[in-house]
Image 1 (cartoon, one colour):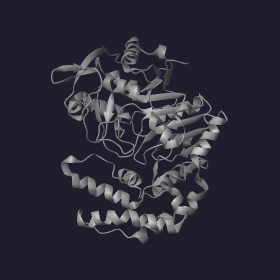
Image 2 (cartoon, rainbow, N blue to C red):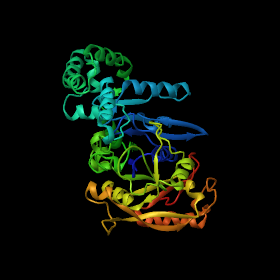
Image 3 (cartoon, rainbow, N blue to C red):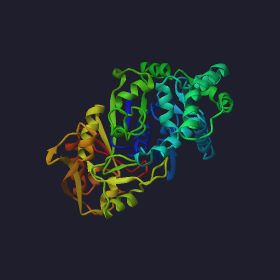
Image 4 (cartoon, helix red, strand yellow):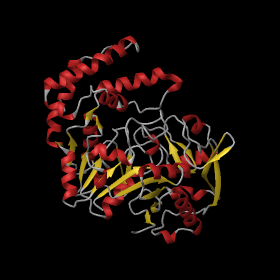
Length: 428
């Protein structure tokens, strides 16, 4: 398939990097593309026992022969980009073939400042942002006072744009948050310092990708964050500032929807989320603690402990619908090997009424109580299994039950972090 989308089907941290890496190593992948988000994302990949974490870079950066692309829908911190590149180079990873869209927006230092002070100002109403300037950068983009990568190559235009952005921001900092104003010249000087190193990487990535698809090359579009964090379709306002659903890929990469052939939703065998917001299956007991500990549920980018809960089939069906998923990739099945019985949320109870689809309003979702169906566990270590048939019968039955209730077939199952710990359920 020449155009494949991999995205998160829950609240993020599902293991998208593993799915992307698997695709890129089992089939020839020519381009791996990030289409939204910034360095608030976190993908963990284990290669030959070595663990790598990517944040702004596509996880395909670790795949020899594949060109990595940061497309126009991404917000780019040059400082974070070069820090991540330098970290990989120091570990012997070849990162020469990276392309960055001239139209991608820049995260400047003042975006992170605004992000942090605003979050503190909200107090108990905090959203749970990473404080890295993602939201303010997207806000400037929508307000048409954003700085784009191409602007770093024209000092006059860059200065004008920074002045326009800080005209409002400085009033907010000084008069509302009681902070010092940010100097335009200092910001411009910092951004210009990245221009020479960026220049060889920058191109029209939309043209590049469309030409690649025209030539029959394979392009893998890698999502950041996840469906339930989408600014339109997620648990608003506890969401990210972009559209990490499948439709956002077309906008974020400059390719038409008719170019997409396959949409893979990555989903954990249980559920986690980071930050604030409703979470119907969240556990506050020993099971929640055990899931967190066994699953190593610490945010790759943030270092925050993830909230944990049981698998939510309502969320899975919703993700399948809004993304048009062709299949699911189920991760971390091995973590559930400790339980004798495993609950799965098959619906919600809201004000005494059973509902089987995503509630329409924030209030309803906030008050949703999970309705559970219980499945027999397998109580064994499955991390050494190398085919679906090798799994214990109860583990196979669990996967098959999730497939039936989740709105899309399960293509593959992860039973550990390594490349080799992936089982194909449906080969075609």
